[in-house]
Length: 114
Length: 270
Length: 79
Image 1 (cartoon, rainbow over the protein chains, first blue to last red):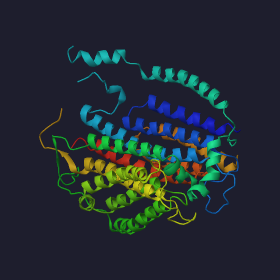
Image 2 (image 1 turned 45 degrees about the vertical axis):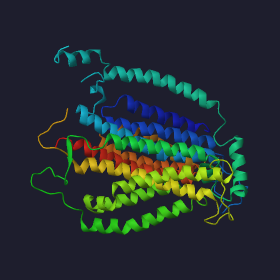
Image 3 (image 1 turned 180 degrees about the horizontal axis):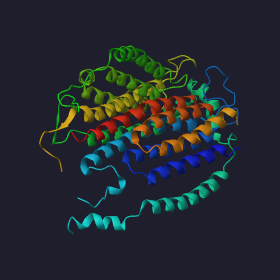
């Protein structure tokens, strides 16, 4: 039972990867990529968790209470925001691909064409 | 190779969807097995052993006078990593702006509608009222979250995105062209660059002062006060500026694409 | 593990295939928005409130907006 978060992280990773591999639309592919990214957030937070630990914010609890690891939370936090910007960049690439090649199907985008 | 022959050859040598799916199932199963084996060797969930994290929890409050240890990690202990992440965001937005800029065969114009002769209608009165009413509190909330980042959950990253959504309210409620007057593009770019540069400059100021780069050199007050954590607050504000500028730039580039850039009549691109 | 964590994990485990299975990008944007909210609940159950805040703001607001705008541009191409 204590392996459950990691198992779910693996499951989400594979599901997102399946979406990327069998996608027919570039935008769908980019969103599935962001699902794969979310599995890494889950993995990171799962590593840093301590049973019955509180959040690492000591405004209203005394500083020696058991708290979860702050480093992985900091990493995940910046990750989420920056990941969204990178997803936006990928979507801009998709828009330009549509303009340039006229199609959004990854199967039809032959890199040697034109 | 003649044009008629090209697509037929391409389809023959292409892997079909069914083959791809089967291939993925096999390799996915192998990957799942390997990952499960790797993760099974880790300590059980909830049984965290890392020394660094435990030490930080104990040491951060007395040392930095900041009660939000995560912000302390982001902006002080691992401020250098945050600098790197910030520049990833900067580069991503830069790339996006480059890709979506106005091309030679496009021109600017008022929004079109598909039906001939009908102009794009503005938003209804109810939508306008609600969005205008919500802009002020959202900006205030964003400022609060940025300023209190060192004390309660929050910080520059979250507050910056919230501030960007405040601008989205203006777009939803009003005419897009009016929005462009409120949000001139050079101002947004200056905001974003100020944020990114501000982060580095605060770190360098520490160097000039005589301590390490990005060290926390401002006087610290008592924990729990708003202005208690030294350079962390300033760095939080700098990051907030950069993220707001970045996301507003992303949204405006896409909006420009959708609404303003139109193909010049009669000229087709390659 | 508390019941809340198990329920949150189960919801996320169901939400991820839902995002992938929504093949039409327009529908997928909204499913992804809801998935961001589910992730936020999960992060909150893992005692990480600021990560949850980040996930809710980004995954439920900023990301679907960007997706919708990109779709509008793509769909509008033949003008």
